[in-house]
Image (cartoon, rainbow, N blue to C red; front, top):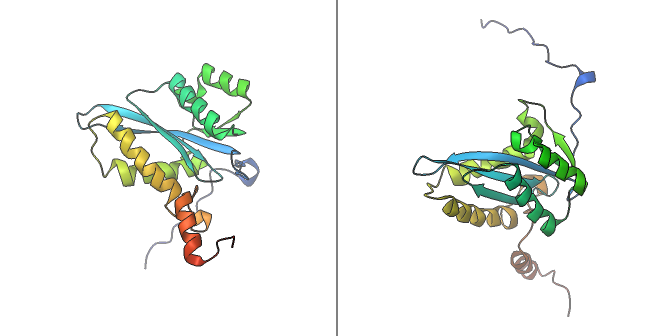
Length: 195
């Protein structure tokens, strides 16, 4: 007969557990993180991933050979110009995200930072899941010779991820449906308006 395992106590009590802020509308919480990979010549490169937690839209994957706090600021600035400002940005405690310049910029533009606890990637779960999908579907499937080649391939995949791919959490809809696809579906189902 197999030996029964003793029930283990949780590492935290209910009273001290983390209350994770949940997204309630677009631009409520953006999640940011890094993914690391290697080019065909053995040189490493970094990707900044930014995700809107409510819509599940991947706002960008910025590819660079190296990336510091200023590069993160540049990528976020472009996103703010395009999508508007989030209320919160969730990240880990990486040096780029806790840098003084980055924290000062967030305060100036009125975005509240949310840092997850060290060693707790599940607190940034939406982004971690996206990063796993990016790795599985693109990085493990392709062998890039340059960061430019990686950026082009990832941009093609991002369009499919955001505009075509159906997501279970969104009732089998894509985060940002492609207008042509929507129009085509409308014609097929006969729900178009007008006379």
